Length: 98
Image (cartoon, one colour):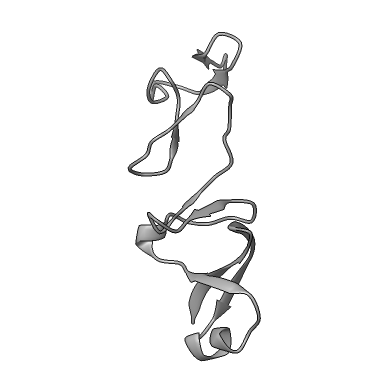
């Protein structure tokens, strides 16, 4: 069985596990999910030019990487020396107290 994303106006409305024969008999637009497409979730948008799914923009300040179609913070990756959360008001990673 293979995973397919069912689209409604380029937005993922459902993820279906099926075979190709059954998908061709269903109404609607379906996109085959693969390693190249990014992993879709209901609510993600499909970019047909790049054959990739994109999550909704997580924060106003974040920037879409046009190559990967993954949102990135304007200051780079989250530090890996503990637990952090994004603080939109300061546009920075804030370390969480433990």
